[in-house]
Length: 153
Image 1 (cartoon, rainbow, N blue to C red):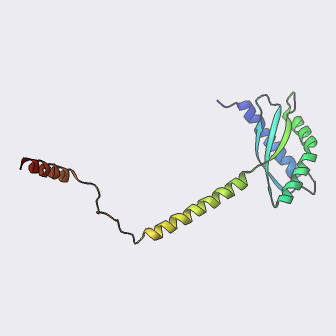
Image 2 (cartoon, rainbow, N blue to C red):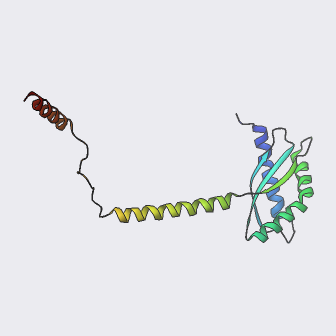
């Protein structure tokens, strides 16, 4: 069973942090940051904010520094807007989802190419043995009768 309170708090933190990054943070180091997920511990003491950044590794690194330097202001705003007795600590984690999905897409493309190569090679192929390698029930019965007739002679 899902803890609905934890889910609601995580959703609220997600909205608050995304809004703050979009409107309040004016750090020039901040790239195109998108908050992808927020996970909150069961006791509501810690929140992990997952984010992605469009751009190169340098842009990601600069954006990480900008978020770390704004962590206090973000936590303060989250605390004011949540209205909880204790404000959760906030940790920013670069989400590896885009890289994972890109890797998965590359693997799927390679598999499609191998399948197409196999399909091309198999286009003119002919089976090596009989067209039907399995013996039917009548053939088995005929072979048994022939074997028993040979024993009688």
